[in-house]
Length: 259
Image (cartoon, rainbow, N blue to C red; front, side, top):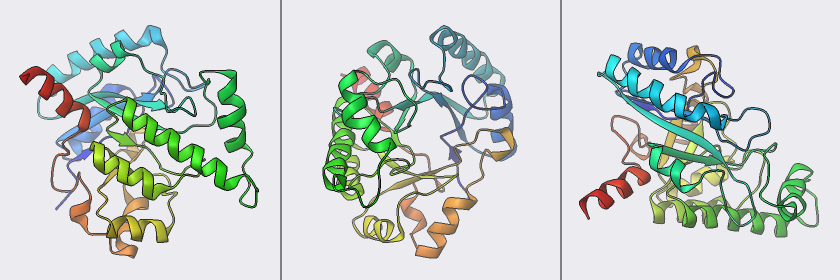
C-alpha cells in the first residue's frame, strides 16, 4: 500500500533546490508512478518562474520524459490567486502547455489591479482574528476561490487557508462540483481539525502532496498523514493513495480531443 504520485514539487526554476531531472530521479527511486513539476507562477515577486524560462522548461521536460519512460511527468505550475474576482497568473497559451494546474494564495504576488491591493491583499496580509471586518473578508476570500474554480480548470487548491481565511466548506463543495482536489500539504495543514472532520463527513476528496522545495523532501507526506491518522480520515478519500488521480484539466483536454 502506497502513494502513487507526488503532484506538488518545486525546482531551481522557482524556489526549489533541485533540477527537474533530480526531482524525477527521486520519484523513480521512491517507486512513484507519477511526479509533477509545479514551480511558482509568473506573478510571484521573488520565487516566480520567469517567462523566458517557461519554453526552456517545456523542452527539458520533453527530453526527460524520453529518458525516464517508467514514470509519468507532469509539467505544471503552482499559480497564484491574483485578485478578489478569482483570476490567476496564467493566460490561455499557458493552459495549453500545462499538464497540471495548481492554484493557491500567496502573500507576495503582483496583483491585477490597485483595487486588489486594497480590497484583497492588504486585508489578508494584516488580518487579525478579532478584526471586525473578518466576516466580510472571509466572504470575499471565499468568493475569490469560487470564481477561480469557475474561470479555470484548476486541478488542485494548494494549502487551503494558509495565509488566508475562507469558508472551506463552500470552497470544498465548489471543488467537488468542478472536479478539483483540496490539498493536504506536506509542510503544513492549515485547516482545523473541526473543518477536516466536517469536510470528510461531507465526502470531500483530498490529495496529499509534499510541496517539496528540496529533492530529499519529495514523497515526504509525514505531516499530513499524522493528521489523517489522528482524525481517522479514510485513505480512500486520498486520491493519490493506491490510485492515479483523474485531474480536471486532463479530462477537459480529453473531452476536447474526443469532441
